[in-house]
Image 1 (tube, helix red, strand yellow):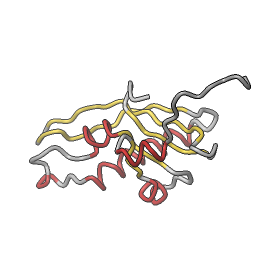
Image 2 (cartoon, rainbow, N blue to C red):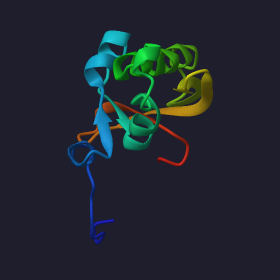
Image 3 (cartoon, one colour):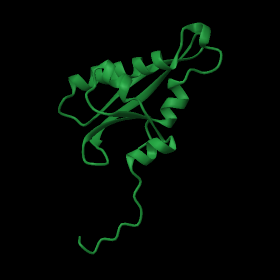
Image 4 (spheres, rainbow, N blue to C red):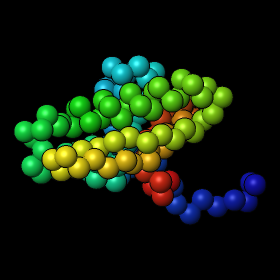
Length: 125
């Protein structure tokens, strides 16, 4: 392996700076997580950010993110032996129209080998 030449590396910090990952560590810690957490831009912009027209329906980024984090935390606590969990989360997409979305959470190494949580949609990894 000493002859291995690294052609390109894309760090988690770069992904957060580029907006590919959205850092949600502060709210994740409030929910009960103990590691840095990020959500993919597809999940964040497609479901966490409420679609237009739902502000009067009590929908907010904070509330939708909290619900997603809570669902992941609940399933993760029941699956302590796994570094990957999946669950379905219901998102209100239009008045009276709910969408069930498969959400995946993975604990893996961060840029310095520390444990970090990444929450994503299928295909985002």
